[in-house]
Length: 159
Image 1 (spheres, rainbow, N blue to C red):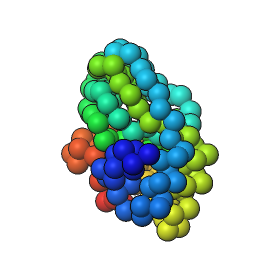
Image 2 (image 1 turned 90 degrees about the vertical axis):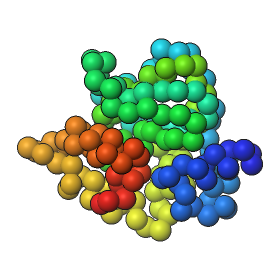
Image 3 (image 1 turned 60 degrees about the horizontal axis):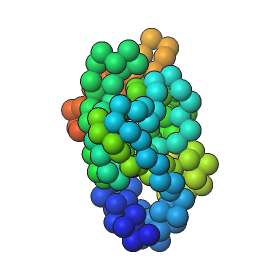
Image 4 (image 1 turned 60 degrees about the vertical axis):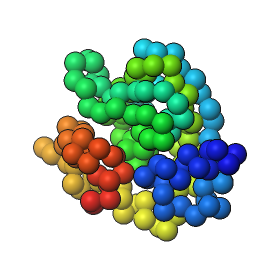
């Protein structure tokens, strides 16, 4: 358990949580293992969970696998955008090497993170407002922001 709590402390999105909140979150995480080349999430799917990389190397790529958006390694998180915005997955995340990830379901996310400080609804509203283009979410803008900051959470904090 303490290993998971330490790992959570390194995730930028979760740094502001108290130790008590991190312990509660650690209990809700489910460990999953993936082989190299496996897709952890697929662009266009419903966002039903976020993931924290425990071990391994992963990459975010476009649905057709022609564009590389960003890399993930131990202590990084992905998938939270779909939970925050309630939108479908914007990218596919593929394992470059065998990987171990910790999965946080939407239900646990909403229960444990969604109500902390009452700020998640503001994040959702701001994310949608800033990312809308031509009547739909502009995922390319979001990924440009993420690539500029090298962190999804840092991009969200700018809202």
